[in-house]
Image (tube, rainbow, N blue to C red; front, side):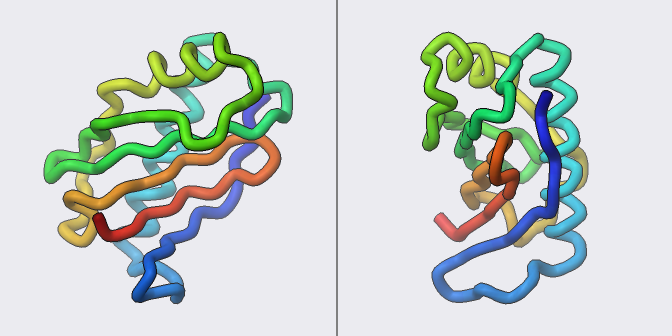
Length: 115
């Protein structure tokens, strides 16, 4: 089962809470990712997994790659395949071209930072 929790925007220049539109996008991205992982049958069983991708102006995530393995190459590959070509509606201007990290399992956090 995947766990979902709060989301966080982090950048080198800014550690404060993200603007509301950015937070809403990150919340939506996390919900979309969880649904896609569940539909694909990706079972993390409480193991952490983190993937990073860049958000384009249309809300598509590209350049997706694992930055924290679940400990299973098969699970990592399934998760990456499930999240590939994921798109989230209405990305805020502030996120275009930025990296987001979606983390699932023990420490579910979503981060975004300037490229």
